[in-house]
Image (cartoon, rainbow, N blue to C red):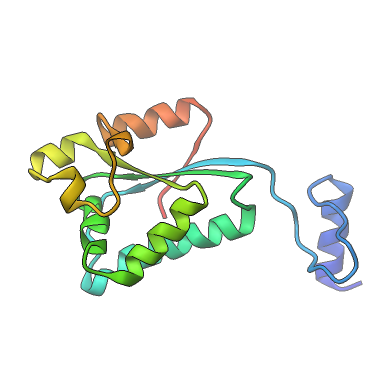
Length: 153
């Protein structure tokens, strides 16, 4: 047996994977996940850091599946730059829209909106009042209390 087939056999024996139909790629099947990402840093040159974070979220959705993944991305401080940059960047908008279509929620810190004197509906791409949370860090703590796993992408 190859190392991969030994791994898959072990996963099947532990109930971590389900047998797949002939022709399907063999991979472990993930249980439903509740995850919160924190984004509070600047995107850097050409928004590279924001693109990396969105790629990580996309990979996460693809791995677990949009039905099995409840993903919240909390934007606070310089992290709101993601939605600001998206206003002028079609590629960022496409990535954000793709994630939103798969029920990924981008949560916006009200404290940051106020301190940066932002206009929610005009300055932040696709933002709605329902996306605003009182405080980013408090929201992360509340989500962890609800069973969300904290990930810093």
